Image (cartoon, rainbow, N blue to C red; front, side, top):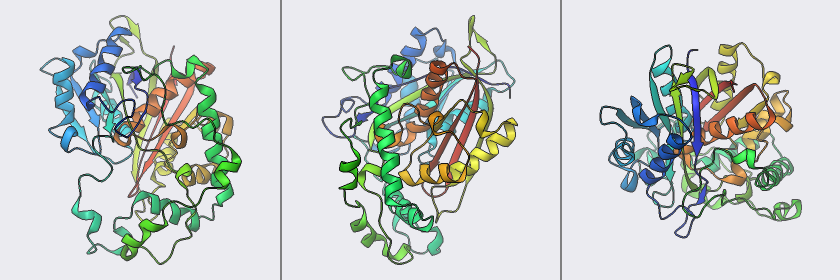
Length: 384
């Protein structure tokens, strides 16, 4: 595949509440800060032909084509196109995938990534009719992703103890990573926020075990879409915190722009749909497609960023695949750092490049999964 990632930068992740570290920012301001950061790091992002942004909550402060608004704010050339897309939680990686397809084999460059300000546009703010439409077959009706995670854990026989174990690993690694600058080399401070704000360093096995399941009350409102009672296993510690954040990648069809070499070559990109009832497994399908495209295997990956949509997705991935956990989410994952929905896939790609640089690795994999059976995956080869 003739496409390269010249650079990929991300904001810190701020808590999605009025006093959160990014809450005073507008979405387009986060994107603008990342455009300036790319420029200062030696890229040429103001000369790109397109800006493609993933964003789930495209209403209110994120309405009006947030990609176009961001382009105008950032001063990107007026001739560049700009569009936003919504592919639920994998939107940021889908946007970069669109960019890869657009530039492959051509001397073009695009900016692609995602942004989500959940402090300004909360989850499900679009109030889509689908969320409550019981005319769909039961298997296809909307079920909030937290309930889908509980239902999946029960169906796949993932124990509460395993969920706790993986949540603790995520928190411990995220806390430890803050003292290793290489892990955050492409994380750009915004205002006074320079760290991922949702990490809980004091998390312990005992505190996790003491927490009650967090989502049983929600099931009452979606009883018509569920197949009877659920054995609720996920606590809020097993769910990624809602947060604010953004990330951008400079993608080009040439390994050099303005004399600067790319950080990585894209070897494969794949997306996938899946069983809407199981909801959170399509990322694994996309992963297998990307591996098949690249001709590589999981054990050849030096680093893997696997989206911890909920603890259950990580548990299933590790159970069903032979993979070295010391290579997966080495600086912590979503359960610790948070999930700014439309931005997450792009954030994970930026993190992956930092992690590959830190270990001097060659091959890296990003796997993203989301509600309703959506998934995407990308494999890159480090080139610097």
